[in-house]
Length: 218
Ligand SMILES: Nc1c(NC[C@H](O)[C@H](O)[C@H](O)CO)[nH]c(=O)[nH]c1=O
Ligand SMILES: CC(=O)[C@@H](O)COP(=O)(O)O
Image 1 (cartoon, rainbow, N blue to C red):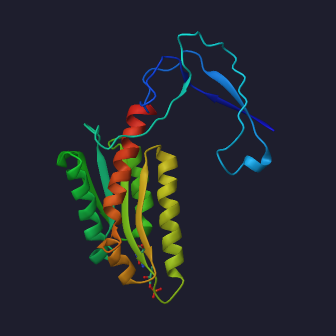
Image 2 (image 1 turned 30 degrees about the horizontal axis):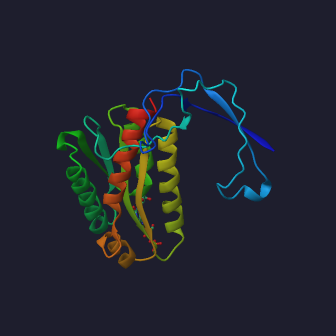
Image 3 (image 1 turned 120 degrees about the vertical axis):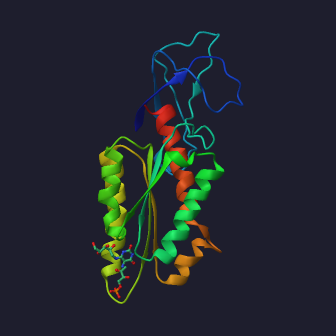
């Protein structure tokens, strides 16, 4: 089975060390991949390429690799939606996120915080904030901790689907920083304890995604 994959091929001769290529081929080159079913899992596909456009001998084909930057975040704006439920957990998560923004030179005036009652309410607020076009990424912070009933499953699943839906609906990256834990110990471990701070991790993801969208996907 041959897969047809359209990709932009950079024709400028580039040093092999560079991962980011500026400028793109004026003409996308169609590359056909052929692979055996046994190689579906890995990247070890046998690739046979038929290029539609012959490359001049001064040009070098190179696949572009696009990634967001953690340091070129000038002017990027962020909003944190944080649930008040289990605030003993969500507040250190929020503090971890804010500390990360500061560490990566995101200005305080470029970060807003919106409090909601619980994780179930995060999705609708994230969607509204994304659609406001005021922010380059929305960080969603909550802590859903299992109790005696199945309510946990409803809240946890709703929070996750709500954040994903907000991303897809608004087109603005909404980062899932909602803990879903069996008990309080697990939650505290992830809010600055032995397992790190998931709020800080969510902020890093937000910076990278905001940069990727702003600098490469517009
Ligand atoms: N049990 C947890 C909740 N429950 C509240 C819901 O999020 C929601 O606010 C309520 O159902 C009204 O719509 N929220 C959490 O964030 N964490 C929990 O453990
Ligand atoms: C995640 C929840 O909603 C949970 O904390 C509620 O506790 P319970 O299931 O005992 O009502």
